[in-house]
Length: 67
Image 1: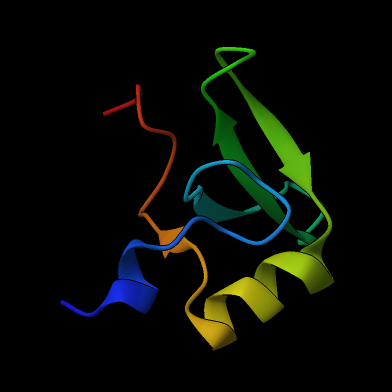
Image 2 (image 1 turned 180 degrees about the horizontal axis):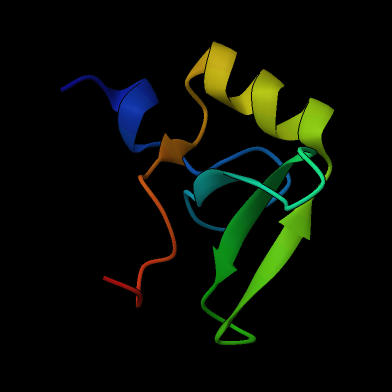
């Protein structure tokens, strides 16, 4: 693993974990887990897709506390 993989996400003090969901209306949404607020916070979809493309955030399957 290189140093870039361990670097914090730009704009955050840690590396964030994001996930994507589809609403009932078929809209794609992005979320990340905030350790400070201890809750999931919605993220602009364009920002999340950019973070995924540039590998600056970890992409997980879903909410970290839901099975």
